[in-house]
Length: 346
Image (cartoon, rainbow, N blue to C red; front, side, top):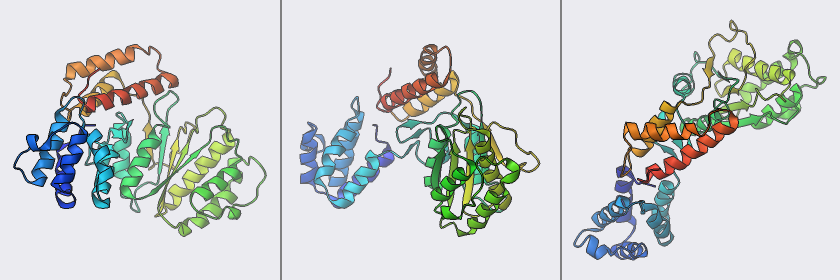
């Protein structure tokens, strides 16, 4: 892990406020550095800054190794800063909508999804939609979208909740019971109905749900996933659609719904203002841009040509892009991203 200039500056200031020259000198010795020789005559803050820059310049960078040892010998205030830096949130820092690495998970491309979330969901109002449908039959990152939704929810305050449908065999009523549980509502208030009601008979479930929306204790983002799985029966897909329609109709202050993999037809007049994203797996060019961006803050940034070469070789291993290949490519991109951030190149 390569420490950027902001992190080094923050750590140096915190060490100056919370530590001592003696403690820093001892910690430096753990990673084989004589701090008196490296930074003679400097004050504590400048010694810390010089030490961290020295560790950062090595290949691979050794700043993390130092911090992991150093955190064991410092007070709680300094340890909290070190722990936060050692546990990456997203990269590049600043705008959460532009994140391409979530913790250690790569999130590549998806410009339309990023735009929709920024425009409609980050700061909702009475006129913005409360529903996003992510479609697509081919492997294109529909479930992968959950990673980004969860990340962005934490940036803006809603509680993210996911409801997976694969291998559940829910009836529509059971589906609504799960929704109630995830939203902190009393599931005993879900009306009793025969199994698998058709959409026309869904009004009892929907109206009861609408009646509970004003009682939501906090703001939620509810993500219903795996709607395109072959094992998810039509009545349950209809229940998910009815749920989304109800939320869009009411536009409650504290709830937005995201349907991942919902490929059925929907009433365009009724849901004409919803957000719609067609998931698409990244191309060679998009992966190359991702790798280049990850490397830009490292000691050895990639050129455009080198990034394109690495991405082309990666894709050449998988002539057929199915779900298995997509998962393997994503894992390889994540491993490459970790190396590139340290100044190492494949």
